[in-house]
Amino acid sequence: MNEAEKAELQRDLDTAQAIVMLQVEKGLLDGIQEACDELLRELGVRERCYPKWLQAGKLSRTEARDRMDRLSNACRLIQGIKDAAAKLPDCDVTSSGDMTDSTPF
Image 1 (tube, rainbow, N blue to C red):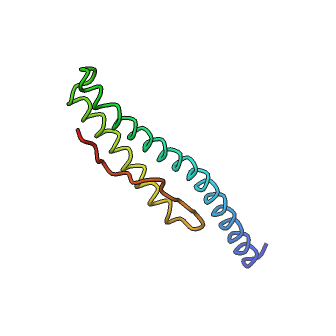
Image 2: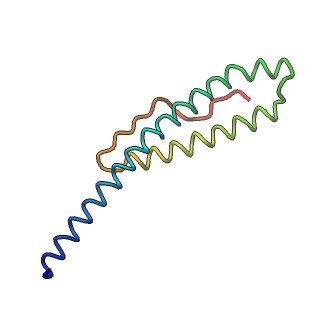
């Protein structure tokens, strides 16, 4: 095999590797979107339930705030991953909601 053939084979291998990596990353994007959706759903549940639980004495204000802070941090982390993934070529990452902390605790 001459140098030109080796160079062409290397380009083909590099292209194949890039395609495989993009497919893996695209597959992960579906999971990222599902994680975002689940975190947003859980935030909504907590925003509805925690005030009642606080009144009933089932949860302390400190514990509610700590739990909401941890979940909000997870939301921001996932949002950062989504933002980075959106910069990948041929990837469509849409947000199903705003991941900001707007809890009353």
